[in-house]
Image 1 (cartoon, rainbow, N blue to C red):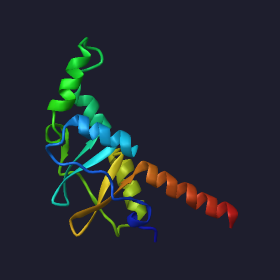
Image 2 (image 1 turned 45 degrees about the vertical axis):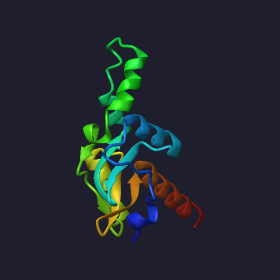
Image 3 (image 1 turned 180 degrees about the horizontal axis):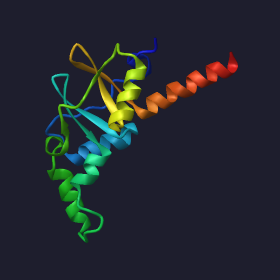
Image 4 (image 1 turned 90 degrees about the horizontal axis):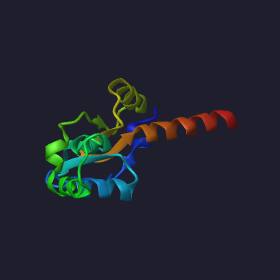
Amino acid sequence: MLTVADIMTSNPATAGRSASLGEILGLMKARNCRQIPIVEEGRVIGIVSDRDIRLAMNSSFVLHERSQDQALLTQITAEACMTHNPMTIEAGEAAVKAAELLLTYKFGGLPVVQQNQLVGIVTISDILRSYIDLMRERESG
């Protein structure tokens, strides 16, 4: 059985509840990811997605100064816009269960835990990568 641990991204970028949206956006760009788990003492307390950041910023249909965007990025914290107590999945669960949860709830990623501590994140990209690997194995064998 292919498990979540087999396909997840280990040691994902994380932030604390007081991190600014600018800091989180910087992490997303540096790590090329779209979700940042928010942790406290290794436990997942929230998650911030690129969509959460877009929603926290002013609408692109409202005219405003660029300086206002910069102010928002420095003043709004992860805690203000994160999804509190997000759904998580255990590292030992079947990978197909992660895929089903991502599909059912239309999440981009799920924090992966082991003994209530963050150990990774499983994303749609991880699921697709494992699918591609499986299809390539079938074609060659």
